[in-house]
Each structure stands twice: as C-alpha cells, then as structure tokens.
Length: 126
Image (cartoon, rainbow, N blue to C red; front, side):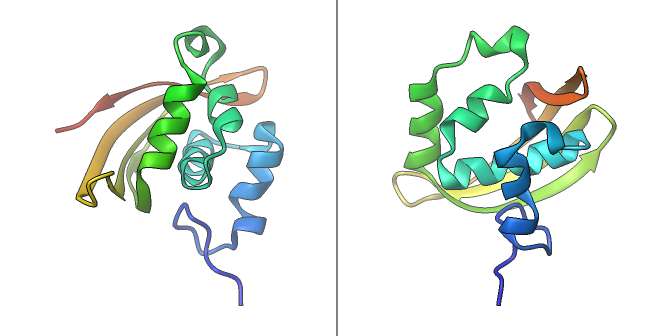
C-alpha cells in the first residue's frame, strides 16, 4: 500500500512530488511546484529548494538557513487555500523545535522562466 504524498495529494510520493524533485521542469504549474517544495521541506531536500528559487532572488538565500528550517520542524501537513496562475496561498502545519504546533500561512508568488516554474517570494498572511 502506497502512502499518500507529503503534499497532501492522493498520489504516492513516487507518482507525485518525487518526479518534480528529480526533474524540476516537470512541474506544470505554480501549485505543483509549491507542493513539491513543501514535500522537499519534509525530506530536507535543500538543493531542490535552493534551485527552485527564482534566479533573481536565489542569491539572497542561504542553504544553511533552508536546511535549518527544514530540519528543526516536523512537517505535519499542507493545505492549499487559493491558487491562481502565478500565486498559491497555503497553510503549512508543523511542530517547531519546542514541539509546539505552528501554522505558516503564506501567499507565494511564482514565475515561469523558459518553461520552468520558480518560487519568487511570499507574504505571510496573518
């Protein structure tokens, strides 16, 4: 029996986010990339997360900080709130390093460059 993917889809990880983790340009929408990025946090796939930042914002990212955020939290689930062509609003639930349940509510912006989707930035929704 295959467990559902970390991103919350009904597909198995192998049939869902793993495909995008192995080949980021296979993401056909901003939502697919968002889901794959969430799964990457659960699996501590730092290089994937770094590489899927938009080329213009990537230089502001530090792999050590991505890795710390990924590892110090226990990722519990992803809820997609609203999707447009270039934005995804979501809530990621996690246990922080103090074992306290947290919700990260963000509206993320994505851009497609040469047929590849990238995460540009996000605004926290209160």
